[in-house]
Image 1 (tube, chains in turn yellow, orange):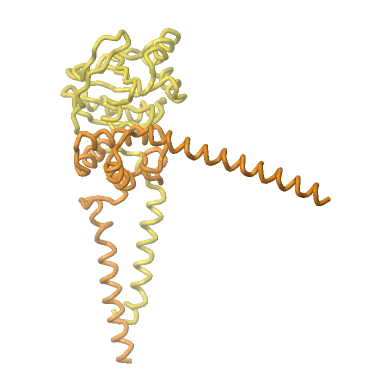
Image 2 (image 1 turned 90 degrees about the horizontal axis):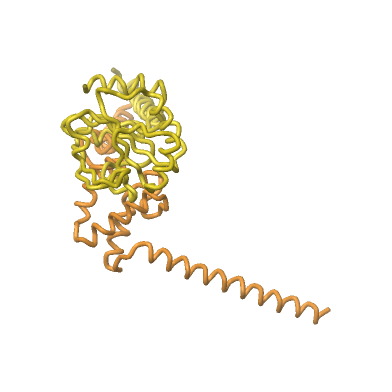
Amino acid sequence: MSPKFYNRLMPVAIFVTFLGFLIKGLYLSPLEKPLHQIGRSIPKFQLFDLEQNPITETVMKGQLTLLHIFASWCSTCQYDHAFLMSMKKPETFNIVGLVYKDTLKNITEWFEQSGDPHQFTIVDERGELAMDLGVYGTPEYFLIDKQGIIQFRYVGELNDSVWNEIIQPKILDLS
Amino acid sequence: MIRCGMRLSSLRFWTYLKQSLYVILLIIFCGQLAAKELEISEQLYKRFHCLTKKLRCHVCVNQSLFDSNAPLSQDMKNLIASKMQSGESDQEIVDYLVLRYGDRILYTPRLNQWTVVLWLLPIILLVSIFLHARQFFSWEKQQ
């Protein structure tokens, strides 16, 4: 390569590579794949369920668990609640609800009206367990295996395509 | 006319005074509210301020935790404050948050397999620009 050719090409090559990174960066969202929680075991906690019985992390051990983080003040959670209600009761896994920064009274009223899709519900009024799990909004889903290790996390609304294409294959993988 | 003007200006003066008094009262009141939110000693506050400036809010992504008023950020700040009061070091608190919220919470990314390119690229670029320029000028001289 002649020095003249090299000198003309190099700045252009560097610029194009840099531009490529920038354009790619525009379409990347760090919110999409929160990977840092995966492989971590579920933190210890002592909270209460809807009947005000004490509940601990052992509820998520021994069987595959879909942990559903929700609140009555979150509008997307209303859709997710309806979706989970329309699903037939799963046999291979448990659905455990985690009430995020909401009161027992609100949730009981809601569930009395439209049913409870969860096998267990943990009430976390102050959002302490949710913070320990790194939750930053509702709704959020965690898949926790029999040993109590977090295997998958999904942030956002649940619908047919999300369920069939993302969550169900993961459940089949894990069970 | 003059009397009327004087009257008006004095009236205006009192209105301004009253308005500014309200504003001052409001500022004092708000300041006290903010102080009440986080019960933390002044000595710790400096540390708290430095640390929360370096952390990113998860709700409003381009704001620091310190500046953010999002409920989640308030919770995180309360957690940080209580951890500081119980004697945890900044490193322990940062590790705790990174484990739960990921590297994204830090404004300055840590050096690891994912960020090695980010850290090394400017150095590589600078060195290559220097070498390139030297080559370019030596080639110009030869001409």
